[in-house]
Length: 219
Image 1 (cartoon, helix red, strand yellow):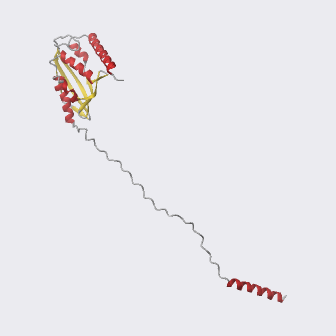
Image 2: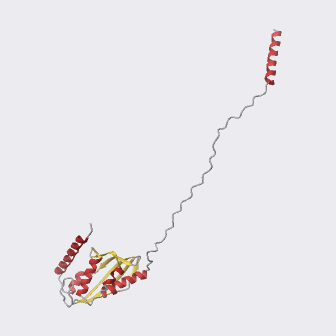
Image 3: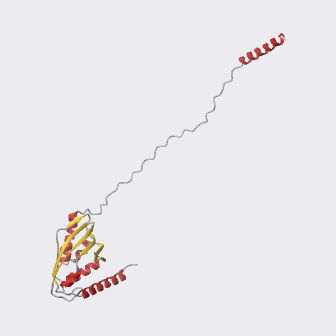
């Protein structure tokens, strides 16, 4: 029994000595996956909006210049009948409002010419012009004598005195829209035209305008 224990002890010691004599295995470090290094991308440049460049082709018009245009309407056009100045004062697509209806510029000019024929001495004067933004406002007075044939009415020889007001919307130094306000019935009364005949005249004028629009409107 004693001998067996001695033999077991010898085997254990020999085994430990052999393990100690072997070189230690080098433990290889765990392989680190090769990560590709991606260079940092520069941030995209912020796109700048192009600066707004003023249109140099459009005239810079002052309030006083707009007033001067409206003054010429009363002085050159309405009082002196200088219709060649229309293109200098109005835009080609100007519209005129009166009595809840809208007229083209040439329609309004045609009626104005008729009243000048009816009252060749017609004079229209305005009071101080006021301006608010692109709107010029004028209170005006018309004086004349109904001695001529115009707008289909027979001359009465009676004086005309009408007061009213007009608003003009200005665009680049020209009139693009007009609102007129006066009593046409009062005008008829002063020249001795009955309300019935006056309304018949208005209906006839509007019918002729509608026919003209029908045949001149492009498809």
